[in-house]
Image (tube, rainbow, N blue to C red):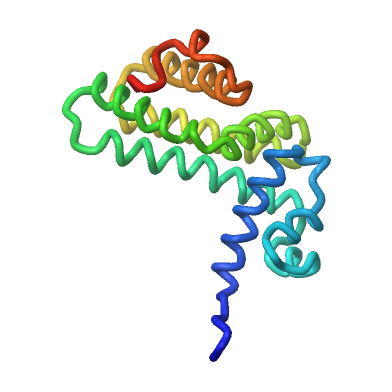
Length: 175
């Protein structure tokens, strides 16, 4: 029986997933590469074979989370005829993403980590790209995109704080 070898790309993906979880739980500064390596099932030195530093690993984790949102929005909006229908479908898709607590908490940690000058521009750029993508994918006017994004941020806080149903702007089962 032969052991299955994992490619460096697969190992990199595992490491990014582990980083999302660890950063979500502890934030950028309190998370060690040792903890991330342990969660990923690799040695701590191997982290640095895949990423030059913790900042780059954090940015890869941020890109992973934002890309999942971007992909969900693109799939939801595809083929729908009006901006309103596309935004509505994207909102429903986001409600499903809210079930992934680690990614919701990571988003909050990414916003907080943007106080670090080494992370700020990349985190900022990815958020702006996401807002621009919502506008492009939906075809909605800027004001509607802003309302959509504001509602998403509100839903993130509700989900992160695990608030009761009375605080949701709608019944989560209706989304």
